[in-house]
Image (cartoon, rainbow, N blue to C red; front, side):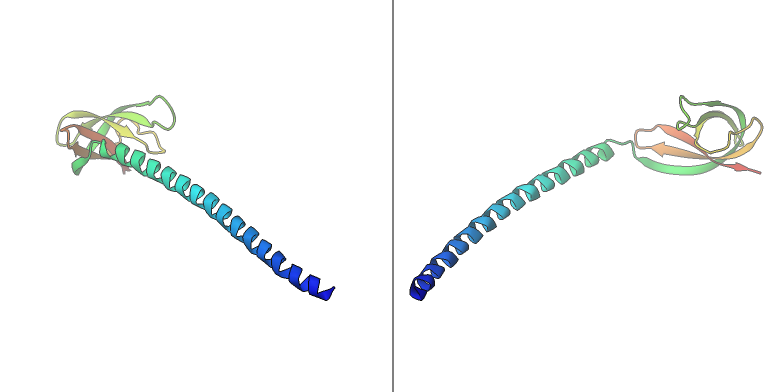
Length: 131
């Protein structure tokens, strides 16, 4: 009887080895599929992020200007900030965007950033209120 048990046990370990190998290959297959899906998702994200930044109008040159607020009105939402009319110290009137928490009041002195873009456009944004 003990001889039957000893001869039977090796076949159980052989079956166990085959089951372990099968389980290993199934887990490997699932892991590779999940890894490929993750790599594909990352590749799509990087491609879309690159496409968005590549098409932006890059800033070539910027400088600081001073001016006095001549008017301000709220944009289409709270996050949009304010559209501020400014008379520059060096002369000329501009319209600038202000995302400051405080509403610029008419007659207030402000520091404005002028940005020259690669396309030739100039944009203005209010940087700070001056005392």
